[in-house]
Structures are given as structure tokens and as C-alpha cells.
Image (cartoon, rainbow, N blue to C red; front, side):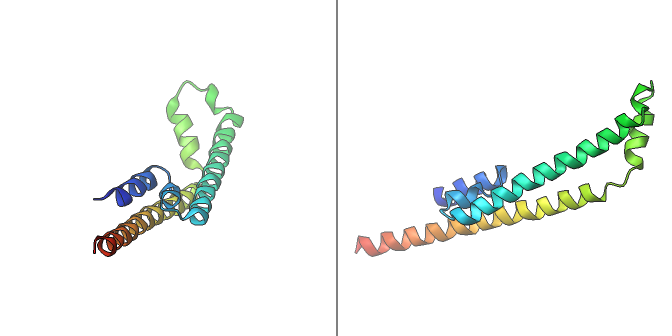
Length: 118
């Protein structure tokens, strides 16, 4: 795999949107990075609310960790499932798009090499 494909692909695996920035698709990369930031903030707020619900109920004073887990599991966590699913779709899109953008850059580079070698 050439450098134009490998660098954006590896970057997209770590941080969705970074591969697009490396591929010179700045606007798309900034949008994806912004969405990543929004997902992280919303996830943090959701986790804070879950923890606040357990702490506020006085369950943490208990000696039994099972009671704490039961209290956490008793809540409705569909919003967290939705956040994970949406982030997974964003992450997969970022990886595929970074790979295809890098492959397209390789094809353009190879075409330029063939044209200038003549």
C-alpha cells in the first residue's frame, strides 16, 4: 500500500476526520472532527447524568457493589446505544472515505508519473 493510502487510513482509524484532512479534504475533515467532538461531549453528559443518578440516590454508601451495578443497569440507556451506533457509522464512513481518497490520490500520482515520463 502506498503512502497516500496508508497515512490517511491509519489516521482515520485513530481519529475520524483526520484522514480527510491528510487527503486535503479540509472541509469534510473539519465537519467529521466537529461531529466527533459533539459525540464526545454528548456521551460525557449522558455518563455524568447516569453517575449523578446513582450518587444522588445514596446507593454508593452501600457495602455491596452489586447494588450499585443493579442501580446503573436499571436505568434506560438507549441514548448511549444510539450514540455508540452513530459514532460507529461515522467512524466507518471516515475510514472508507479516507481509504478511497488516498487510493484516488495514488491513481492521480501514477497518472502524472506516466505522463511526465514520456
